[in-house]
Structures are given as C-alpha cells and as structure tokens.
Image (cartoon, rainbow, N blue to C red; front, side, top):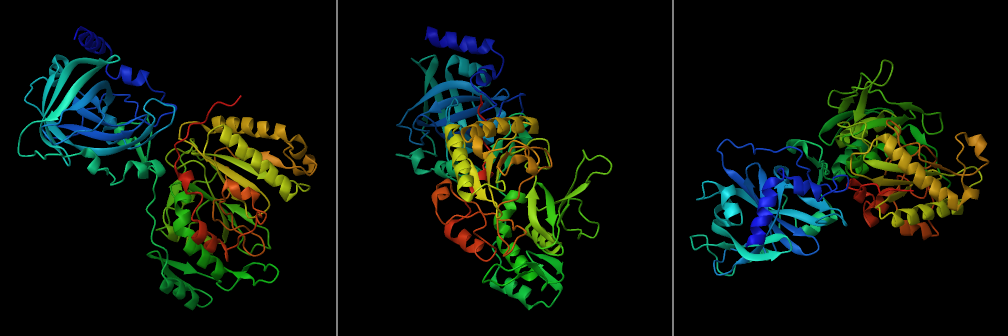
Length: 543
C-alpha cells in the first residue's frame, strides 16, 4: 500500500493532465491534447462518464469518470459487468482531458495506446461520496451510473497490488434492480455514438481529431452526406430535353444549354461526346466525386467551345450563378485576385459547373476552414516528350516502393492524359511550405534512383524530353485534377483511381477509361480512392 500512496501523492504534485501529455506526441496521435481544462456544458450539474472499447496491444475497456474537470481513468481488461458476482480488474491510469469523452477513431501504430477506439457507452453518474477526488485518493469510490449499457450501483476499490507503477483496483456492480447475471460486455460490441464496431472504425474512421482546437471544434467529420445514385427516370428526363431546358436533378433545377453540342471529338471507332453525354456522366459520378470536392475551393478548367479549342482557368464564381450554388469568399484574397470560389458541397453544383463548360475539376488540397493547411501531399509524374509509358510505370513503381518504406498509405490514379498522380492523405497541421519541402525530398530521392529518366528543369524545352516529378503543386491554390474528373481529349477520358498492383497490368494506359467505361470500372472495382478520405497520417522524417 505504501507504494500506491507514493504513486498517488506524486500524481497530486503534477499539474492536471501533465502525465497524459508527457506520454503522447500530439504531432503524431489524433487524440485530443487537453490544452485547457474543461467544464462540461451541462445546466443540471451532473457529471459524465464514458467507457471506450480500445483495441491496443491487448483489448480492454477504458472506464473514465468526470472528476474536477478531467476524466479519471481506469483500464478494465474484460470490461464492466452487471453481474454482482463478478469483480473486474481495473488498472488506474493517467487522467484524460474532457475532450476525450467522444473520442472515437484510430491512434496510429507505434504511438502510446496505438489501436482503434469506440465509445462503447456514455452517460452521467453520481456518488454517495461528497468529495470524489478524495475518495479516489482514499481508494474507495461509490458510483451510480446512468448509461445506455451500464446502469446502477457500482464500486471502485483499490487493492494492495500494483501493475508496475499503476495501482490495481476492482470494479464491480452491487445488488440492485439493474443486476443481470452472466452479463458480458463483449455481447454488446457497437458504439453508442456511431453504431459501429471497432473493426468498422479501423477500416474507415469517421472523425479526425485536431488536438490544437477547443473541444467543441476538435472533431472534424470526414464523411460527406451524399445522395443516392440517380434513378433511370431522372436520366430519362435529361434525354427527353431538347437543345436546352431545365433539368431537375438532386433536388435542384439546373438550366442546361447547347445539349447536343460536341464537346469531345471521337476516338477511332467511337462516336463524338456531346454536352448531354457529359452531363449524364457527371450526374452519375457526382455522388462518388462529392467527398473529394466538398468543403474545398474549386478551380475550373473550362472549355466552353469543346476540348478541341483552347481552354482557360476560371476561378471566380460568376454573378449569374444561381443563388443555391455553394460558394466561399476567400478572406485572404488581395484586390484583383479571385474573391469567391465555387464549392461543390452538393452534387447539383457539379452538374451546373459541367454545363458551364468545366471539363476538368481541380479542388484545393486544403479546406476552406483552414486554407493554409493542406490535407494531401501531391506527387505528379509528368512524362516528357521522350518518356515512354513503360518508363512512366518505372517511376510510378519507385514511388510505390518509397511509400511502402515510409509506411504511408498512398493512392495512385491515371491522369486521363499521359501520366500518373499520387495523393498522400495527411492529418491537417503542416503548412504548404512543410509539405512542399517534404515532397521535394521524397521526389529527389526517387529521381536519384533513375537519373536518366528525370529532369528538374522548370521549362519543358529545357528537360530534354525527360519526365518531371512535380512537387511544386504542393502550394496554396495549386491543384491536381480530381479523381473521376474528365480530361479535355478525344473520347472524354477520365482520371481514374488504380491500385498499386495494377502498375503491372499490361493493359493499363493513362487514358484507358472514358466517360463511357469509367462507370463500369467503378461498378466492378469500387472507388479505390476512398481511403484517401482518411486524412489521419503524419509525415515521417525524410533525410
């Protein structure tokens, strides 16, 4: 017992959450930092608790009680039970910040507590003990839990045993009306917050936590609400329009013009592609494209006279845009710069942009709520005039090897023209200067392996026909074409996500898929870029 008292006294001498912060690197873990002590926003004065199912080195349940502005915490290997005849081991661990109350996500491998976390139960609690902090120090706490899964009278009692420097306690239910003999937490595996299991959270985290934000703003939803695919009746309504008309699509009335105008010349053995054909494709792919565009300023590459004519960049949202079209006013814009951008927060806005002549969609790599903080690092393998397709593939394979060595998830796609691009999703934090410098180091390391294939010259004429590994797109307002966007070439090719293994497919070509085949590809393989929406990675150091 003396050792336990010593540990408790040491904890009292430390500032609140000091031990918690000391054990974590918040440049790597998405957990909240607890930069300020928080009082829960409740008018009735009730304290809250949370139980999180945590699969780290070993699966356990984290039992946390609000005490004096922090979450006093115990790791319970087998979880709480409503059976009073079963006493559960509970290991007293460091206090956690109140922001942790709704933390659900994935702590990166290699970090303290690395693994997936769900909010298994939460609610309010009260106690017979007038001073709960003193009761914890004394080693006996009386609890009444009012959760969705665990309810009733509980006891936390410190034992004489230790696990390293950590105190061992027992957590058990008392005899009351909530008793359920044989009750096992593992029979109830889903989160009360999201309804998901640990496996589902691991596969696709919904929340990205920003440790440098206040608690109310710490969680950023990664998912975007997207509509169901268009019904055949809606597509038939487009086909039934004459040269122009109003199409009710995704709940919006979009005025369409010049529907039979040729926008893309034909490939050999195929028909030309009209604006009506383009709008049909855009409406069908919009629910898939939306998560890559929503919340981001969009640079449009417009070809109002078709892909055979000279295109131009259009960034300023025109005055004639319908009022319902989402937009963003850039507070950092200087006089003469683009003030208001299109933001495709709903799929009808993409249909409107396509009718406006946008044959390419280029979203910013940062979001409008933090335009100076990118969420992707971009790599553009840009072939030179003398670069063969096999050489382009060789450079892409070197990128694959580099990202494997760096243990980073990376997502390649063919450009729809000649090259291959790679997106690396990252946790928001680094500036564009940071990501550009990091991408340059990676690119130059790759280029050093194949120096005969790569030029670092800016001007095309100075490259001697060699490829360029373009890291300069990692800058504010510089963009690469979005996945599933069309490109202005014959047949309306599409920039399509691929797997790294497909680099070895002899049939792969950078313009292999068009608006007539991309949807079949999507149906067969799914959206291979979807993992890029998990913007949770921290860039490792590159020498």
